[in-house]
Amino acid sequence: MVFATHAGLQAVVLGDFGVTVFFYLSGFLITTLLRFEFEKNGSINVRHFWLRRALRILPPFYLAVAGATLITLILYPANTMHGSSMAAEVFFYANYWGIYGENREAPGTGVVWSLAVEEHFYLLFPLLYIYMQKWRMSRLGQARLLWSICALILVWRCVLVLLMHASSVRIYLATDTRVDSILFGCALAVWNNPVLDAARLPPNIWKFVLFPGALVVLVLCLAYRGTMFDEIWGFSIEGAALTLVFIAAVRFYDWPLIRVLNSRPLAYLGLLSYSLYLIHDVLLRAA
Image (cartoon, rainbow, N blue to C red; front, side):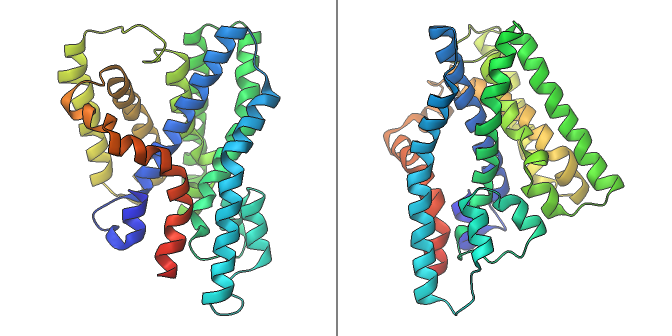
């Protein structure tokens, strides 16, 4: 969806929603891995977690930024990019730099604002997860805490938009207004996780009520593009609806509609998705 949007199809494809799905998936996967580790070992090794994330994310990221910088120096006019903007990308505060600074990064690397949100999550969330275990919170209690944080972020967006008249860019890019999209995925991972926990409702309820209902809600969210809705309510409603979609997609992977997602071509595309996300806009602009 992001690729199609950057390729000029923004009138029919909403790349913004693709980013929200990306955030939700990250929260679900990372927290599921933390649950696996804690339930196996009785503890979480935060240093190993950070090291695994660094080895997974940083080499292709820095390679893509270096390549984009080289392309910019060769193909684009002088002063197209600025060192301060590139530093913001390299040190993962590009989302806030995009709000408060002069945005002059290498063309095509603007997508890395979302990686800044991810890195802030990777840095802080494992510590919260460890404390939730130390407090001996039930899995439902953990989910309630995460949903409560999501609700507070919704309230914060209301304050920013209605009282402080914050810009759309401030709402869209900032970690403090977007991390709830990740936390909704975390909440699913700790409670009613379709990978680790038993099903609570019969398949037909999911097949004929919850899953199609969630899809309808998402379609309505994407169809209604009001500024106030997008900046305040949209991310929260989409996060709740994606919870139902993810449960159905993972638990009932043999349904015809879901089976397509498990096909070899799409699975292979999934393996490449991070690298494609990093380089696609660089190549589109250079072309």
